[in-house]
Image 1 (cartoon, helix red, strand yellow):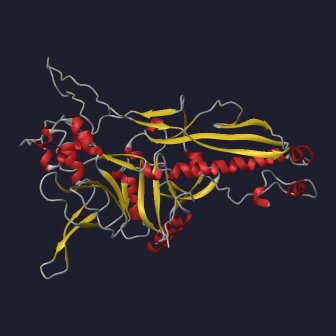
Image 2 (image 1 turned 90 degrees about the horizontal axis):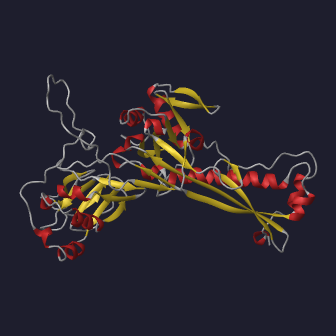
Length: 443
């Protein structure tokens, strides 16, 4: 009978109407540091577009990828790194070819799915073959940007994952299907296509002149942009709060029942909001870190060396985010080395810090059954080209910034209903704004 109730019972409501009492307590409430430290950007129209300079490094022998949440796609022009596609410049066909790669997420030790071409987007795989004395021999180790196989010749050699991997696999039948539609795909050129010069970050170069005298001819230039910039749509978390009118009328002294019900509902929504900002496969921070800014621990537990490597990969860092058990594991490693991390104050709470960067606890970062977790580091703020939170304020019946409580009426059972809604998302403005230390042992 309890599971079928739609509102708070009068028996439970009386607990707030008699004796000296506390407001209703809630164990789910956490510090929610991520929501507090993220600078929030107002989003009109529900969509936030991140424009970047065009980034594409052709001719370096490695394939580059773009990721949208947990979904990874190879950059079509980067397929020119495959030997059989050197010099092929039909971007429409390359785009169609890129769409035919299928993503596979593997764990350590799992075999690589068979296919004509295997692209390593993230992680390490080992190519194996028969050994000279029987058994299996390790022939080659491939990591981020490497590939197995080619469009012509034999299929990709057997391999297995050494770490957690993200692979893109092209099946032979999908390739044959495309080549039947385009005869130009079978032509080969000896030279790779002429590529526009790039800077050390892979962005299209801006031609400049410096140190000249007299009337030297100045180079002309323009800043090229990504043709398909990432767009973030605001996500939503909603619930309908129901309060019986008899409870609202008779049991409101000394505590307002509707206010207490609403307060706890909002706390639960905010907890879910932070969970989504960390774990959502479309916009969550764990899934939106650039593949080149995901690193693995050196030995398993999080060491000062690991956190130093995270910091060294970006021009500035404002906050670490880690599960409390990961923070405890880092503290044990510091104690073992005789190191004493700094302490600092953030939002009124005293937290551990490393190299002056606060390490904020966040229990929304998952821990696997094997005791593995992740540690994030980020730079925040639009002016710093960092990570920003996205929200929409000025909503109808707004109760808090970005959260509305809308009266829905009273039904024929005398139940009052309120629609509680919040809109949110997060955006990483440039790749080095967010880094993730993966495979962190916390046991």
